[in-house]
Length: 92
Image (cartoon, rainbow, N blue to C red; front, side, top):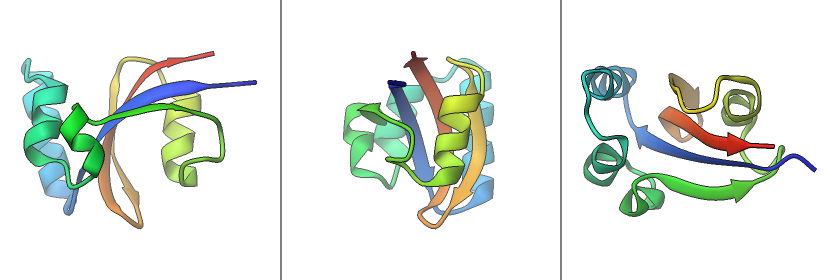
């Protein structure tokens, strides 16, 4: 069975997500930015969502985690919760 681990930063606007992605691209620490800016309770753990299987997250989120490159920062990805930056740590 496929399992993945990912972390994310959830913000209210696409512009906030783009600004944070630019900071990460310039060497900003994903975990620290998640702690400071994420609207999700997982932000306290640097955005870490732990392990999950396909179908446990909303489709747009799943599509990134289970189809896109591992360890790259993807997004902004829009869901009903807001805009996400997503980094898949691993999947098998």
